[in-house]
Figure 1: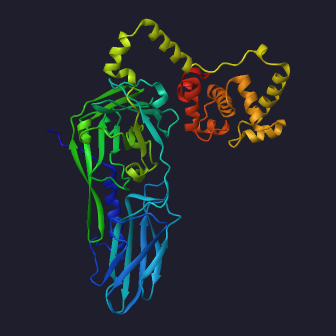
Figure 2 (figure 1 turned 60 degrees about the horizontal axis):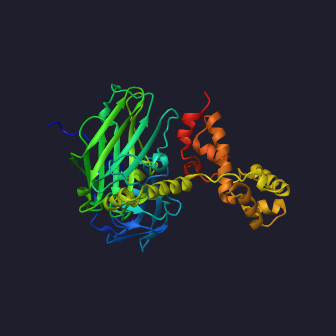
Length: 488
């Protein structure tokens, strides 16, 4: 059996160990007999925007204690070391205000104390793996459709887009469920991808699936966190992280295990690849949880074969592997028409009932149509055109409200809403969203600006809101619309 080559992000902790050793004068295991930490201790999770550093000092003739910290700045994969303070007399305590620091996840921060003693060698104590979770993280709620065959039955409505570094690349991820398994699918479009890239093999590229099944939102993976790696070449494997805490040191030890779960990989030279991976219900115990934390990450290769990891949650490696920031996925109910007993009743029903149900479904999905001109008075039409002109002039404003439009048109908000509904069939909010999608469609057709940029220019709160509005009014996504309609 070939040996399993795994390079998980947790191995970056080796670099942190080296940094700690450097701070400690080269001895990573140095631990004083007369200076110890009372707080915080290794493995602590601090949710307040301040940290009380407290030391127990039994040494005599201590002249000063220097405190230093190692933490991860925002949008960075590299640690920095800062001097916190110098304490020259008891009590040896410091209130460290951490409100301006980003959350410290996955590996946490390290704090080192060095006591200078008259006539003796310095005494050193340290604590690592101290986690900060004081900044609230907005977590999106993702719906997972039911699919008996594991196929995408909801179109692009349930797919999520990865934010790629290269404008020529794109990627989408999708999760569906049934009684037997969770199915994860990604499709990566990359015109520079080919199998025999130099430097690395395609086994370094692929998909990573991370699941927080008990939703404890730990800052680092625990025993109940499921992490799977699906390479483009080779057998998938699971990684279980075990936290080891001893003598002030904290480290995550990865334990890889091969898994023989159903998966498939499709590769298209100079086009990209797609991966499908199934996690059976047995991996969760008795059944798949109704709600769980989840993150998907793709491993892409650049022209030199270097691996880049891009995830749906978190913009650096420490957030990517931290359940604290993962989105919350929830299973949609199994459609009634997929129930076997109900199927028997439906197929036994009379034909006219079936036809009536189809008609009702089509009517429900159909967009509201504009009311014919003859159904409106000329005065009503003139007033509507005036209100519509105000909306078109101001729709790029994110905070555009019906009160503003009503004030500009000399009407009250309820009258404006009734006017719009009579002439379009939409409420003010829905009509504003529709108008914004129409402007966005023109920009998608005629420019190569990013979806985020277009969303900002059209007055949407975010690219995700624009995507929801496209699904609502046009039954498509901005990406798919641009692919089909963009002018060369």
